[in-house]
Length: 243
Image 1 (cartoon, rainbow, N blue to C red):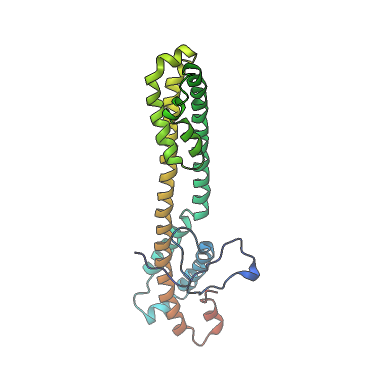
Image 2: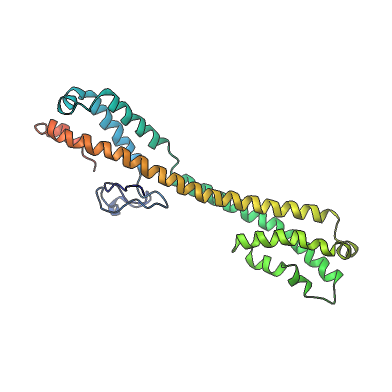
């Protein structure tokens, strides 16, 4: 499990300024999404790296590990965090994928409605054919239970071939069979695309957490050194504070 750094802002970016929590709370980043504005930390990090580079001789005199390479690694980690896909982007992407999933299922439902009409026509004395083909269940699950909808859609596209002769005689177009199979496959692909996005969001959130913690660890070490180096210069020391 990744370590969760404590010094972070746990505000929603839309929170009014007078209600925002200060940095430095003990609350931790939530693994399901952004709990801080990473851009704030990245912007501060660029300033700290420049300060560190400008005063590298003083830092190197205190700790031999502080070298130009240390600064380069710090800069690289900062760029990596800045380039990471933010959770807001993934939420928008998931909303789009869910919308495409619903469109695919609504499209399939059009074929199911056609089938229902011709089932009633071909089997006028057997109303249970509607239940047998699972059309009511499809209608119930539309927009609610996407996984079961897709399963029922795939079964319907295959199972309906049992009555192809009767349905074709009743007037169901011959193209309906191939088109329905294509529509069911589209639903399955949209479901997989949506579910994949959920897992990608978890991966990207974990990546942001690990990158933030690595960057935060460097800042903590350099910040401690700055308190020694600039203990007689409160103006410069103030620049190392993360408020």
